Each structure stands twice: as C-alpha cells, then as structure tokens.
Length: 68
Image 1 (cartoon, helix red, strand yellow):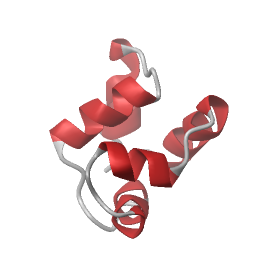
Image 2 (cartoon, helix red, strand yellow):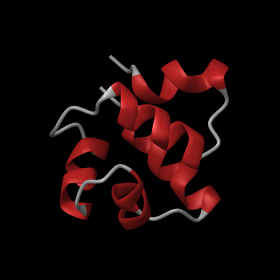
Image 3 (cartoon, one colour):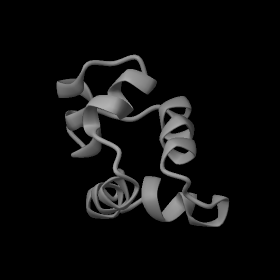
C-alpha cells in the first residue's frame, strides 16, 4: 500500500497534480486517484515514475510506497 498522506503532501510541495502524474503514468486521472488512495494497486514502474516526478530520494522510496 502507498502512503497516501506522504504522497499527497509531496505532490503539493512540488506543485504536481494528479492529472500530471496520471499523464506521466499513461492512466486517466480517476485511475491515478484510486492508485494514490489504495483502491487499485500501483505498479513498480508507476512508483518509479512518481518517484522521479516528485523527486523522492531513493532511501525514502519504501516510506512512500510500502506502507503497512
């Protein structure tokens, strides 16, 4: 499961919308919303795209994308 709160906060900090992330991951905005809110699973490839877009340091990747 992704850490929704951390991701949404990072998106605000970086000024990146769900629409922009959706386009980068080649999905529609409602699908990205579901992925960010743990309704749909997020693929490793999508997580890597989001990591790069949000400039998430490698050592923080797990905190954003592997929450229990």
